[in-house]
Image (cartoon, rainbow, N blue to C red; front, side, top):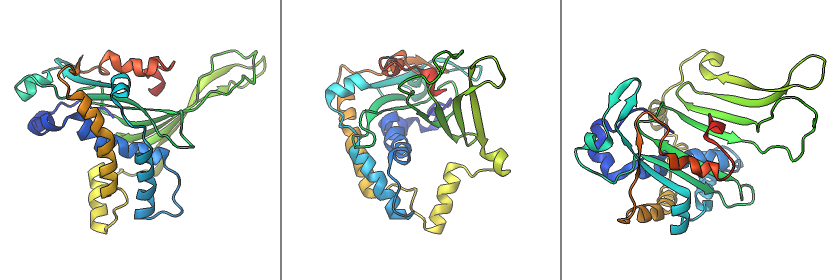
Length: 275
């Protein structure tokens, strides 16, 4: 999740919470849950939240060593957003601060289905664009079926766009039609909700307010979910509160601190995989 906006009038609140509590604990973990959870026996407000809770409880515990290795905190400096010069976070809140406006985390859901599969979480303010998206990168086949084909193959990727422009895109490798050997090239299959269904999708808060009116609590966090998310985040907060820890600066309008890319690169991945 990323946005080009700064903290604005929320500065006093944001300076006490930071991106980890404001976005990771309350939002990103809620996106991890529907990706990793098992299908409920039937769709109901409690059965869905039961399965989400199992995911939160299976997240790999964040020890101090894991926090140092697999997390990055950042804070935006002055830069350019949408072609306009912007102030740094410290200038916006009026004082020097160690509050993070960017978080990148590598974690794992330690259960039989997902053990060994990395989950990369990233959120930040004053980024290059406003975007909420889930990207699922599929494993490459264990052995090439067409060893003499032309063209590079890439792992298939499913992009689930939450906002803006809700929809899904599947990036895959296809064979070019025609004779003369096997030529492979990456192609995309697109589903835009606005185009496919011909109507405006309600925004996030509009949808939640309608659920409140209807008494549907499925998408709301239950108390035990809140406690599980807070328990998982707490060791990160404790480690980051140490005097030696300072968030890394990144220019506004960029993709965040350079150190965040190393969470992907050391696993042989790149940020381009998720674009």
